[in-house]
Each structure stands twice: as structure tokens, then as C-alpha cells.
Image (cartoon, rainbow, N blue to C red; front, side):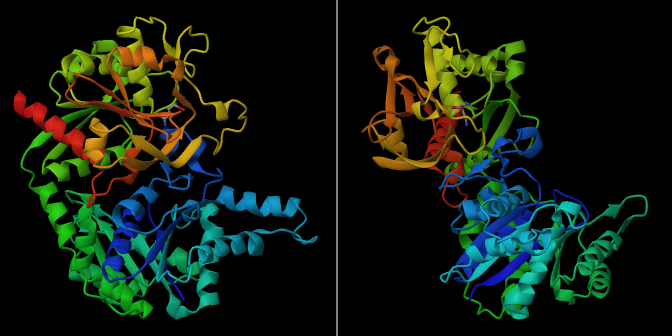
Amino acid sequence: MAKHIFITGGVVSSLGKGLTSAAIGALLERHGLTIRMQKFDPYLNVDPGTMNPFQHGEVYVTEDGAETDLDLGHYERFTDSVVTRDSNYTSGGIYETVISRERRGEYLGATIQVIPHITDEIKAAVAKIASDDVDVVITEIGGTVGDIEGEPFLEAIRQFRHNVGRTNVLYVHLTLVPYLKAAGEIKTKPTQHSVGRLMEKGIQPDIIICRTEKPLSKSVREKISLFCNVPLEAVIEELDVQTSIYELPLVFRNQKLDELVLNYLGLQPGSPDIADWQSAVDIIKNPDGVVDVAVVGKYISLQDSYKSIYEALTHGGIANRVKVAIHRVESEDIEKDGPEKVLSGMNALLVPGGFGIRGTRGKIDAIRYARESGLPFFGICLGLQCAVIEFAQNVLAFKRANSLEFDSATPTPVITLMDEQRNVVDMGGTMRLGAYPCSLAADSLAAVAYGAGNVSERHRHRYEFNNAYREAYTNRGFIFSGLSPDGKLVEIIELKDHPWFLAVQFHPEFKSKPLAPHPLFASFVAAALKKRKEE
Ligand code: GLN
């Protein structure tokens, strides 16, 4: 039977529960265990797919096409666990299931209530991923202990331990231990209160992980241990001054957190080897050089809106032993100041995905600059579509060329709505989502970078290249180097006679890992490095 770890957060949000969970997962895998990871989000949206990046940050897409929380990106980057649509549930999703069942009459006339119906559904979602081949399921509860909307989840995980037995469940609580400058002291009281709130719900945490600015002294640890009722060695420090998030498994391993967890759950330790993590972290800390990459987007002020892209660029840096200095550029600034001002000092340009017309002019102008000046360019999803529009307007002289998403009256819709999207009414979960195969043209930049002829990548879009214009493009040096196996959908474009100009309709960033950098990101950073050396 699978063992379970539930991770809750206290005091404030944004403590990095997702990273903490992922780092624990990474360590457990090193002991030879098969793990699964899962997150519950207490908000009422059925999934984050329809949410604005200002609300939510990046929407992370799984292989099977679920639009999920960005913490699942951390799970996949840190571990080899299988992440699917069963790996992320919101309150909205849980309620939707229960209410549709009620509408179908499946409750046979019963009164439907939060307890037991919603809590049962939550427990069923946990049990669902605990298949026979799984040793440990790690379930992160989003939000902060004390939130009203999180209560059914806490009740469900309390019951879960009651149902499956004490020795099969471990509760980990991540909390903030603030340093008060005025007092010159680290304060444990918020942690005590947070654990108090958890205990009101019947949950005694077994391990307390403390996010802190300053190292925890022995006496602070002893205080937390005594007042929160956990052994001293179960008070773990998570200092927030780390160069890289990828250090976290090493930080936990140094404090023997993995052994503590295994011990609690009655699992045999393996002989963990984390040398590969160590060497990735060493490269991040002591790179051989640096490259400057501009990311021109729309939600640039938000740390989390292009999370996986920033991580994938870092991984591309690891592959080339350099630091990628990411310059986040608001596309509307390019509209104001022109591309030259921002991009002339850069070694490469990346234009990420997006929706809606705002900011597309700046992206198109940036791409023109990269195309004309030989600056390496990587376009992703909307970035590909903007590259296609730019080429139409400036090379093919289709002055009003556009995407139907931005101009429904354009005489030259070089980007058009996909056929399967024409009758779509609901906005949630209806894009072309998840993994699809792609065939690569022999000897193309893409084929060389991947070192393969066929690949599979994840998608999230409604629009695509309009095939009516293929010939016009190829005549002027465009290469359609990646197509769906039936040849109908354009997945990758390249430009002849340019050092590195490549754009993809899919999202390669979702499959990049620090220990397995995505080939396109590795190749892109290599091109940026070459550009830098030439200057
Ligand atoms: N808005 C574009 C589309 O729907 C691009 C989507 C994206 O960049 N993820 O096709």
C-alpha cells in the first residue's frame, strides 16, 4: 500500500510549498521509491485555464492536456513522477464532480453536504493516484491554514489518516519564521499559532519546515519543537537566501530530511546519489560565462507568468555551462522606444506565448529586428504566430496580414482559427491541449537540435498557421521544419540564412528539466553564446 505525505502551509502564502514538495519528492526518488505528486487548490475555478496571469501566473499543461497550477511544473522538473489531470484538483473541480453526480440522481435522494460528500471526493482524488506501483504519494494543499476555503481539504486529510492508519500518513507543515529587525530576533509565535490552527482541525504536524531569512539557532529550534510538539530533528530549516531553487534537495539532504521521512513512514532507505543535482547546482553557482537573453512579453512584471520559460532558459544555461541573464522586456516598451534600444545589447531574443492583441506590435517589431540583424530568435506559440505575421508584413508585403485572433477583418489571415475550434463555445479546457506528435524535416535546425526525426510536445492554442500561404513563405526562405504527422499542422518554422531563427507552435518549456535541459533551449542558448563571442 502507498504511503502518503500531506504538505500544508501556514502564516503567509507564497512560501514555496510547491518547491518544498518537489524537493522532498526528488530526494525520495533517490532512495529508489516510486512517487506521485498532487496539488489541491482551494479556489472555485474548475481549473486555472481561464484565469488571467495576473491572478494566477503560468498555466502549466500536462501530457494528457490538463491546464494546471504551475507547482506541477516544479514536480515535473524535480522528479520523474507521472503528472496527469489527476495531479491537480481545485475546489471548483471537486464541487463540479459532486454536483453533476447529484444532477444525475446518483446520490439517490440524499442531502449533499460538504461533509461527507465533498470530503469523500477529495479523499477519492488522493486514493486515485495511489496505484499499486506507487510507494509514496505527496499531496500539497494550496493556500494557508486558516483560510475558510481550505477547510474541507484539511478535514479530508485528517480523515484520510484515520482511514488508512497512522503509520501510513505523514503531515508536513511549511511555515514562516520571520526575523524582526526592530527586535533583532527570530519570532516563532506565528508558527505556534499556525500549528495551533492545524491542531484545532485534528492535525498534528510531524515535521515543521521553517522558511527563514536567518539561520535558526538551537534555542529557536527547541522552542518550535516544544511548543509545536515535534521532535527537535523534525524542525527543518529552509533558508531563503539560495542562489538557485535547485539547491533545495541538497539543503534538505544535509539536514537528513529524507531519512526522517522514511523513518516515519517505515520505509527502507536506499543509497541515494545526488551528485548530478550537485553538479547542476555547481554550474549554476560557478558558470563559465553569461549570455543576455531578452524575453519580450506582456506580463513581464509578474515573476510567475512565464515560469517554465525562465526555468528552461536556466536549464539551457546548464547545458552550456553559462548563466542565462534573463532580461524581461515589456512588449509595450518596444512599441514606445523601438526594438534597437532594448535589443542591441542582447545575445538573443525569446518571444513567449500569449493571448490577445495587446503588446503584439512590440513583439512583431522585436522579431523584425532579430530577423534583420541576425540575433538568435526563439518564438513559442504566440511567438511563432508573431514571427509569421512579421514575415508576411515586412517580407511578403502583405501589409495588413494578421492573425484572425487580432483582426477578424484582415484580408490576409496568415494565422487562422483551427478547424476543430470553429464551433467551440465554452472557454474552459477547449483549446488544443496536451501532447501531440511532430515530424521533423531532415537536416533542419530542429532535427539537429533534437537529434531525432519524430518528437512529441505539449500544446495550448486555438490558432495555427494558415496553409493557404505555405508556398508564399517557402519561396522567400521560410522552412516548415516541423509538421503534424499528417502534414496538415505547422508546428515548427525556421529561416534560411539566419544563425538561429526558430519558432514552435507548442510549449517545449514544459518538458525541460535541470538534469535534462530541453534540446531546443540548449541549442538556443548555444546560439546566444556564439553570438556573444562574435561580438
Ligand atoms: N493566442 C494564440 C492561440 O490561441 C497563442 C496561444 C499561446 O501562445 N499559448 O493560438
